[in-house]
Every structure is written in C-alpha cells, then in structure tokens.
Length: 276
Image (cartoon, rainbow, N blue to C red; front, side, top):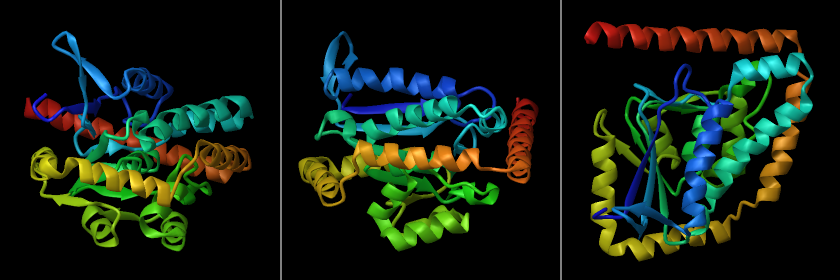
C-alpha cells in the first residue's frame, strides 16, 4: 500500500500453462480493476493502484503458454468454435493489460523468474516494463509444431524491436536467455537470480518521484505504436485457421511437448518433496 502496488501471482495446478480455468480466473480477477477504474479494495476502502506486477509461484516457470493438450484435442475433433473461444479469451485477458485496464496512471510490470514461452512470453510483453532474472528463458517455439504465436506476439514485439526483428524471432522458434533479450531491448531490467522481486521494488522506489513522467512516456508509446483490439482479433482468426491446417505430424510434435512439460513438472514436484 505504501507505493500502491498490486502483486499478482500465477499459481496453477498441473502444467503451468494458460488453461481455460486459469484464463477465466485472470479475467475475473482483473475485471475488478477495470470496473473500479484502477482502484482495488484495501482495508475496507478503494485505493488507487499505481503499479500492477504479475509473476509466478511455479519454480523456474513464468508460464509455458497455450494449453497444447487442449489444442490437440480440439484440432483432431475439428472444433473451430472452441478454438476461436480459447483465442478470444486470451485476447480478453491480454488486451486490457496492454491498455493499462483503462487507467492511464497505472504502470504494469511483468516479473519473469523462469521460462516464459509462447503465450507466457506474450503476457510478459503486454506489460509496460519487463523485469527478468538472469536464468529466465523467453521465446516463441510455436514454429516447431508448424504454428505461430497468435495472441499478441507480432504486435507487442514489433512495438519493442521492430517488425523485421519480431518476425525473425517468431519464425526462428529460438528460446533466448533474459540477458540476450535485455541486449535486444525486449527485457527492460535484468536481475540476478532470486533478486527479481527486489529489483521490481528498487525500480519503483527509484522512480517514484518521476512516476508521472514515466506513466506519460508509457502512454505516449501506445499512441506512437497503438495496438487495437480489432488487430488482435484478426490475428487470432489467422491463428485458428492455421491451427486447423495442422497435420498428424504437427500434432504428434505438439503431444511430445506436452509430455515433456508434464515430466518437467513431475521432476519439480519430486525435488520439492525431497527438499521437504
């Protein structure tokens, strides 16, 4: 409350991806902020928020992106409307954050303390400021199963590094360390491992007296490179069409990635159990 900062954490069960359940939870959570025009209830009264930080409670993972297991199921059964619904729900979540929830005096911050892949990277990009720890890796691997990131990556990356560089990163499928993306101008603040939260607090404290100026700069960025809902919806439609064109080989690759994610989370759970 001293700085008017909301700290919000992804803490899903199972694979830390954007399941329908998590997407609905985020929408319910964030809609309150929109309804109250940038204020949140605290100690019985509505308090104006100055910063909204999003991070993850899953060790070494910010978010692994889209629900690939669901995609495989829907593509195999040719459920176009269901795929379109999923894409729309993603846009319903990311677009308000791009627009600072309708509150120009609210600064959004992504705290990336682990892997941010696909939709996880898109979510990080939707904030005004990205703070990432050195061991974090970020990327858009969708091209590996013959698809592309369709919920904001083109629009958000091109705003930061230009269309050509954004397209190169998307079509390469490369997953890059936070330090490299800091060099490229994608990550704003590079923090040591375990020091991400402190880095966010330090940035807020350091720039508190210039908060109005920084917020105005972030708003000016949106005027210079505006991202409209219609643009995101049209790209999401392209994504749905492309998803429905995937063949069995592509879906098998997607399924292999799902199994790899599950093994990874099982490994984390086993390590945590041994530590306790």
